[in-house]
Image (cartoon, rainbow, N blue to C red):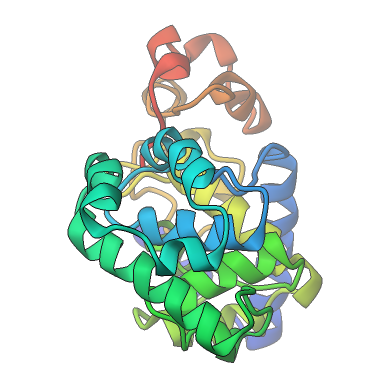
Length: 264
């Protein structure tokens, strides 16, 4: 890892931007299926789903939201929701009392201040109960096609490992990455980095030796660099394709890795 980091020690700002854009293109090739994994049909449904996703998996949220969306169709429905009933529905997502409170207050705020419609501006969204900057960017990018960078735990970890930033503050990370990548690519970059974090660049032991970004990453060597050891760490339905992208024999990926759930 030290040797890899040393290669980039004298990197200029323009060099970092060029490298970041090359890495972004490789991520696009490696993860053509990257997308928002919360199921929704309207901006309101996505706003609700993102509130429910706190401290929960997208899979669990997607199991619950069909029930929620069928019963609560408008902002006014959430504003007038019977608390005990909504808490019962939301219980499987965890922190259900706080989420119930957030959804009721969200509905009330939308009715009172935005004519019952989810607004399409960042400043308006972050003024709503339960909607932080990360959530607002998810809504903007996926419900309104307004480019936004979503800094979740995967994104923060990876862009630091990539050497794009040296920063923990999400707002500063968002600003700095925005300066590296074309605006039109922000939303999809977020999805691709998150998919890469779930499938390849894991928190504890990244699959460095089976990563398509290896030659461009200053953190190469954080995880195993041998093909067999790295291939066993790949996760998700496209694990063998990811190995092949990295020039690794896909037969080294065990079947259990393909069937295993990705990191939340």
